[in-house]
Length: 150
Image 1 (cartoon, one colour):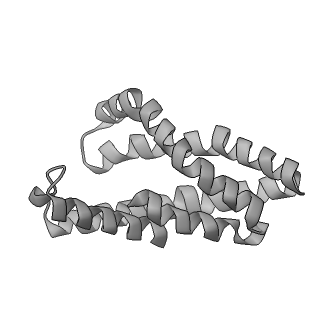
Image 2: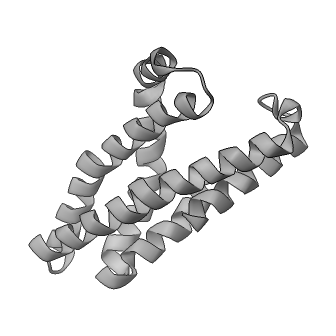
Image 3: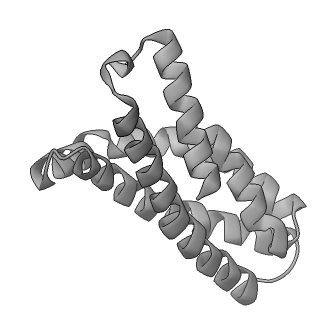
């Protein structure tokens, strides 16, 4: 949760400094609400859900390089697209744009976001599964999440 919130705070600061995405129009209370929503989503979906998911993968597929590759493939093919779809749907709802806007956002942007996500998280997840012991994989993912969120 903290990693997601920190990454969002950094992203908002950079956007504000560069004047992109209408960030100069967003007031500070809205920025704090957004940061809280991102942190909450990160804590629930990625933090809690990810912890259960990664422990299950480690329990059912323990071992070395082959198993790490299998855990990585399952993570990127199952968990990551689901969480990304939830995030893509949640964002318009947080902004108060309604269910139809959430559906349109998922329909129009999900595949594009999935490609970006696989580009970044492919390397981060592979490094985590191959280099980090199972108990440290959620922490490695949290560190990468700061970079991803920013």
